[in-house]
Image 1 (cartoon, helix red, strand yellow):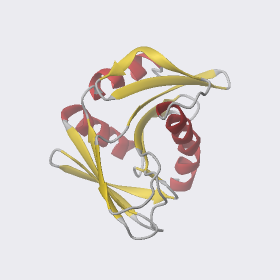
Image 2 (tube, one colour):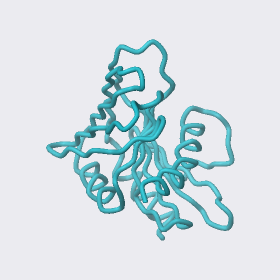
Image 3 (cartoon, one colour):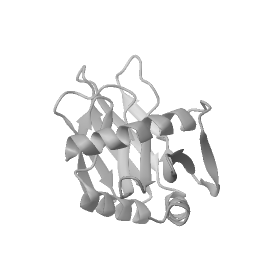
Image 4 (cartoon, one colour):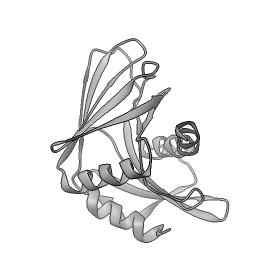
Length: 173
């Protein structure tokens, strides 16, 4: 289940990374989908429209020499039945068999990793994490790179709720 989830969401994460970093792709910003620190996008996957929202950290701390951009994404993909799937792109390869700790308000979530990406354990964890994001003001993500470098990324949740409503309206199922 975890590997299938990682594979299905992996292409979405890559597409999100390309769009948020300004690289042109066949994606569109959803009208009204730019709120605070979040942007909402759509792209076509076969006959279906997939929606996702993305944000970059406001603050990154770690003793690294080189790191690609980091992002958090929340995806609604009708082709997989996924709704509100949370994923992270670290900007570096995670340490093998490591977990990522995400703190939102008083809640902590542990995500599994594969290469430079991290995911929740499944739909129930996605729902809980998205609910915490709706009610939170920031999100602190702690991970460890393949070179054992510890990193802490702080994401703003300003605009999260409005952007989530936008992707839910655009991709309701």
